Length: 149
Figure (cartoon, rainbow, N blue to C red):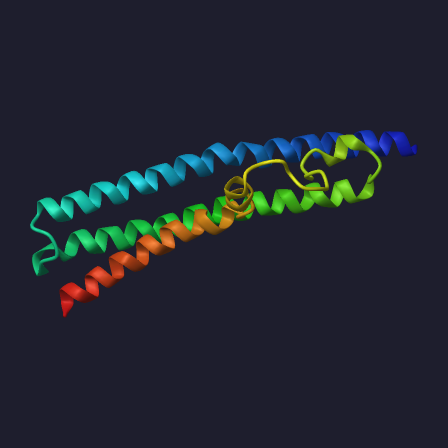
């Protein structure tokens, strides 16, 4: 097959992978919002049931269990997206001079934005997507330990 045909076939694969990668963003956002909503409901249930008392250990256990489920769920979604991003980068490396393969790579140079935007925007989403349920899990586990003590 000629070189152009190979590039066209690779570009079609690239487009599909970018679509898969981009399609996970609303999924991650939705999962993160539901995590926060569930945590707020559990915290409210704990307060309404009398706060940190021994009798409320089931609420803390539910919070820890749900947080663990979100760790796994968000971790899997993030892992899929990382795998697709890796394949996207592999294809892009084959065609460094073809701008069609460079849509996900940020342009070189300083971005003209406030420092807070540059700082917050430089944090990889995998950190807070997995970090948020990890922190929730640890808080619920600490609550369980305090209630057991």
